[in-house]
Image 1 (cartoon, helix red, strand yellow):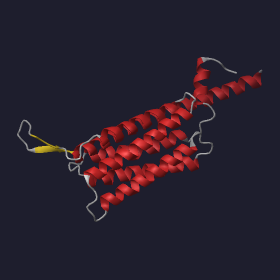
Image 2 (cartoon, helix red, strand yellow):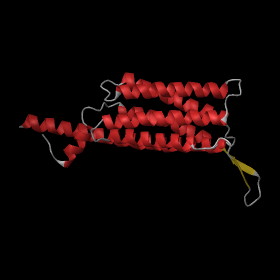
Image 3 (cartoon, one colour):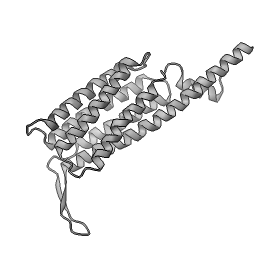
Image 4 (cartoon, one colour):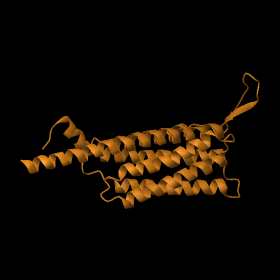
Length: 227
């Protein structure tokens, strides 16, 4: 058995991680990046707009994570991933209903509590999954980092006062104000950007480590046959 540093690093990725995991990370980065771009380049950050963007990203991500849970054979954390998928689908569907329905329920307070509840519960699920998956690997670090920033989003958004409306001016004395809608939606946009970049980096890193693992296994097999 190879006990070199390279061998240990390969074992950290090990045979327990299916090849498709890095692809799922990459697919999950797409809606997050798109959501961040839409929020960044849209001026009107109302609660209804926030519900629509957050709902679309959450639902899209929930579907992708659902396919990961049921479609990847030998997934090490299938139950946790499936729970996260269901939660994302529910939060996404509810948010889209709030944002697109012909009613007045899409208030900033409702948006704050929807995002905060989803983020705190989802973050907790991911952090618990990281503790359950004890192997030190790139995959575990992605789960922990993702869970940490998701829970942080929930805590930060939960503390946004719904009545916030602070007026500001500027060098050109342009009138405006920082409202709870703008702040809460802005936090969501920042979260999407950070999460998207994190998932891309982790997916590329995991793919690279898996290639090293496969090369190491091939080399070990060749040495065994020759000996």
